[in-house]
Image (cartoon, rainbow, N blue to C red; front, side):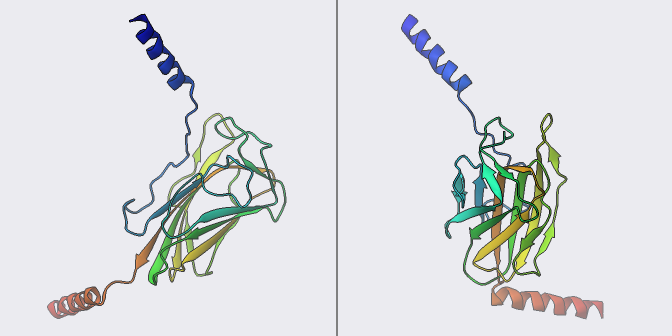
Length: 209
């Protein structure tokens, strides 16, 4: 009996002291997570690899990566206390470039929901093609007692390219702790749905007359 109690106490101790990953994935994207073409990738930068591979990825269409320009790894403390961060020291060219593969079938638009946890807000965000729209649907969140904030951006890329590149520039001396990317590809409506839509519009105008 005593041995069983000692074993249970040891297991409980391990569970209490074991480090727990706390990803700063603070918002769900503005679409259903089970959407057929949805992807998810997160970078927590546990390794100094550049380009950096995701810590976690759910993307059947291909790999994802982040290339860091003008930065150094492992020199500055992150939100969770470790030194697994990138410090942007180069101004004005310090940036990260995110590459994500998506459904290659033609579509209307690709949507990207991006979350960045860093000590300073990104300066510029560029997505190809230039007609892409970029908004920030939620207010930034300050992580109390730290210098870190989590920022979020919703990017709509027309034409649904099979791969997107998104570049974020940062002010000098920015510490980047984590990046989270959700995407989905919105397919072209089937011809039957377009015909029904047109018929509904026609009936609507006839009723108004």
